[in-house]
Length: 104
Image 1: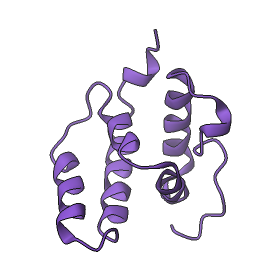
Image 2 (image 1 turned 45 degrees about the horizontal axis):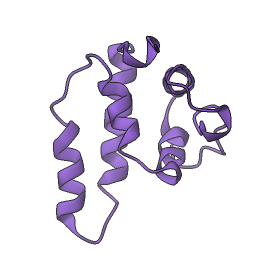
Image 3 (image 1 turned 135 degrees about the vertical axis):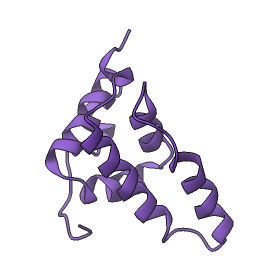
C-alpha cells in the first residue's frame, strides 16, 4: 500500500503546484467554463491527504509535462516520488524527466 502518495508535501510545494496548475488552466480551452470548472475544483482545497496528487491527476500526460516544466526542482521531485510510490512505471513519470524549462 503506497504511503507517500497520500502524504501531504510541504505547504510551499503544495501552494506552488496549485498556483502553476491554475496558471495552466487559465490558458486552456475554448470554453471559459472549462478552465473555471478546473480552477474551482482546487482553488479552495487544503494541503491534506492526497490533494497534492489530486491536482496532478487532473491533467493528461502532455499537460503534466507542462506543469513539470513550471515547477521548482523540489516540488517536481515531490510529485515524482509520489507517482513512483503510487506504482506508476518511471517511463510514465514526466516529473522525473523534465524537458527544458522555457515555461517558467
